[in-house]
Image (tube, rainbow, N blue to C red):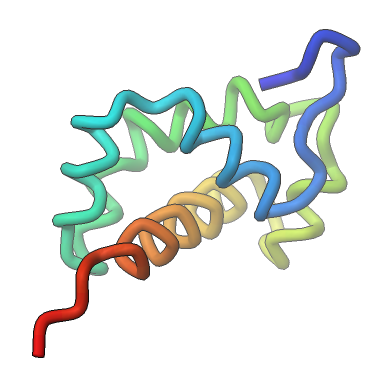
Length: 95
């Protein structure tokens, strides 16, 4: 989502921070609990939001480039996967 100056996040880290600040805590828990191959289920919900509100369809080629993807769909997948990895990295380690 563009900030008050109309600027979109330009890096994957900044996009993930934006999502963490805007996605409800209960939804973050649900994302954390997904298996990696289940992330595709987020394509039309969270993925669409990412594409629309982080400027991936227009106005934010820097973020697409930062993901290493060729298009908005691929970029949203990378961002969501990075969010998932970060959330899972914060799970308590059980020995």
